[in-house]
Amino acid sequence: MRRLIARTFWALSRWKLVTETAPTRPTVLIGAPHTSNWDFVLMLAIAWRLGIDIRWLGKKSLFAGWRGPIMRALGGIPVDRADPARVVGEVVERIRSGEVFGLVVTPDGTRTNKGPWKSGFYRIARESGMPVTLGYVDRTTMTTGLGPTLELTGDVAADMDRIRAFYADKAGFRPEHRSEPRLSSEVADPAAL
Image (tube, rainbow, N blue to C red):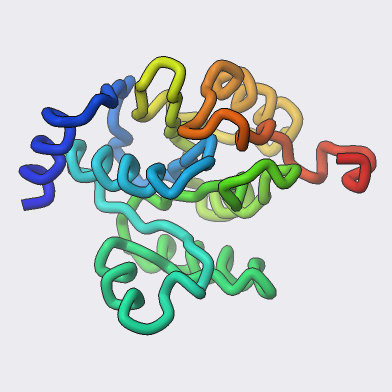
């Protein structure tokens, strides 16, 4: 049913799905630039069209009340922003226990330019041995999809340089809210941002 919904979406959408290749093993799937709630719809349409079983991280307030069961059914994992390290441990434990999925993470965290990316995606990928697949939204070309899948080396600067190079020409749904792919550990003075 999900593939039928996705096929219909892509047939009617002004957006074009562009994908190098779908990941063939569990991966951390970056969703960036994250500038609009429409990114969520596009992410589901990509995953459902390609048959990728996904989980995604979202702030725990999204899971309150009647929305909770719906968000969990769509693959959501609630994140308590007061204790983000706990989430990394829980996700790594799920992977080590044999659960197979693509984990969608929006490292820019919010839909507005608020400074450096969150490093959780990097820590999860390194601790679990999962590669990172670069998903994107680009309003200037009306394209969205999946780019390359990268194995992280542990050299944060070099890995982030490769990620920055990919996202350099990707504007997001709302280009004015785009943030530069940069971790706070790469910034000498985070207060200067």
